Amino acid sequence: MEKCQQCDKVFYTKCDLSCHVDSFHKHIVFQCTTCQKSFKSKTGLSNHNREHSGQFRYLCTYCGKGFNYKRQFEGHKAGHENERNFSCSKCGKSFQYENSRYNHAKLCGINKEKYVKCDQCGKAFKCIKYMKEHQKCHLNPDRYQCAMCGNYYQNRSGLHKHVKKTGHN
Image (cartoon, rainbow, N blue to C red; front, side):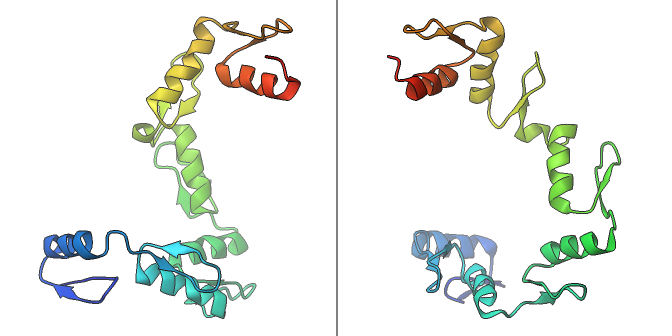
């Protein structure tokens, strides 16, 4: 049995639930009446509303800070305890916080499928389009020249910032 988070209707299969959501709730957004932040589900809004009311599912015994998500709470608690429970599966380095391990994983190459690296300098990009634009600076580093002052820039963005800052056209 699958329950719709928007209207609480119950369906026998995930497929039926998915069809229902696509047909009836695709464009429905749940908005907080206090701060106007939007959420995709009633559960998300409900968890958010606890923050406004000061009701939290998890309370830190060290400092009293509240959390609605176990993962956030455990990461916070580990900071008090100086525990390093989050380790990199590639190099073994450990971290106090999950988000620190996640950021490290990008550098360590674990999330390679999400990032594309420049084969010349190793800089990582979220998509191949940005990486290819970046690689132009290796082929012809002085490609972008200001017509007014003659300064060279590695990319179109650098030249655009210069023109905007100086007023050169």
